[in-house]
Image (cartoon, rainbow, N blue to C red; front, side):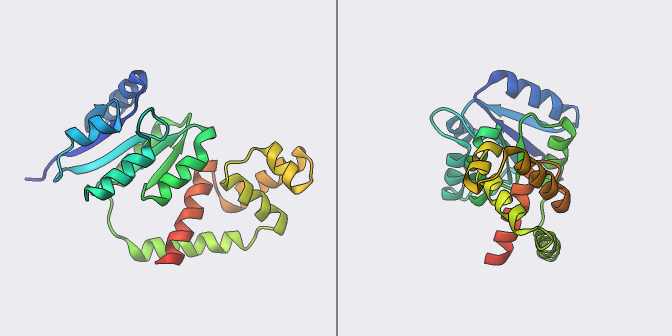
Length: 206
């Protein structure tokens, strides 16, 4: 008999915890909620299967701290991080630390459910990951030099205004380049762009 796969929700906001629990329960998933990283680490069993959905920015310990602690204790559960736009640089650090996905608030319920399903079915698909990374590299090659510069600014979490200032162009021009980047990369959101960038980096380092 297979052990139940548990979805752990870690968020300091009780309203968010409740809404995520209700959403996940509709998928017949076993859900446990935790108000802090400390609460999660004290409650989770080392041999559990499942995944973790955590906010990035929380008081005391952040989602990044959670990933660090999980690595220290050899707790091998895939982690999905959720973040507000202002926390994109922190979320990027979290993904580099091992998070499997990034969802930017406000996110669509189906996007979260799809991410959780993928995390629960996680396998070491090296060939598939390599093929996806190459497809992303091919898309990156279609960007103009200016579009690549705008992409770099976006991945740093910079606003259109800041990117415009750094590049010496108008905000409107940045918006046009940003739209072109999203279209050429086939990215529906900033978080998707972040994921693509990190996937390529990971594949290049392996």
